[in-house]
Length: 161
Image 1 (tube, rainbow, N blue to C red):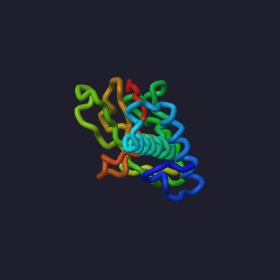
Image 2 (image 1 turned 180 degrees about the vertical axis):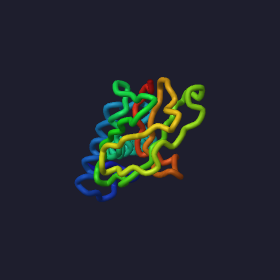
Image 3 (image 1 turned 60 degrees about the vertical axis):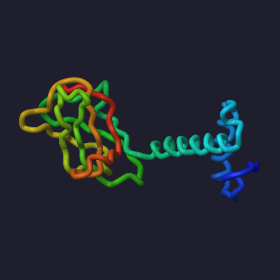
Image 4 (image 1 turned 90 degrees about the vertical axis):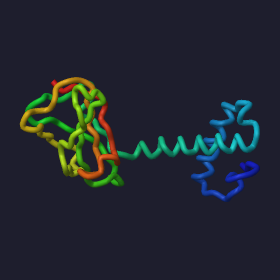
């Protein structure tokens, strides 16, 4: 299987050949007039490869299981946080509570500084005044208390009652 031009002439491992074939097959199924030129086709292949890598990398990361749309939190008392992970994930993280509705939660706030990620479960204690009440909350598992921009995982939306 050889393609003319660009990256397709390089020698690749068997794994690369399988990925390359999958991308080529995918693009061949949607062979639109805009991909008929070699340059446009190569761009489409590279975009598809980038998309494939994004999906593959997202399969190997923290995943928040609880809270979720069916199992939310209450305002007071310890709340359950459950997640799954793979061995290559960071050994720990911090937890940030967020809500896009700023009338419910004016700013995101740190609710747990350091969590041992290898445990898969943590009890999250609300602040002394309790968690705010409402819909569309999410928890973000972030790199650390000083790096909220590196989000390892984000829960589905849930309700705090």
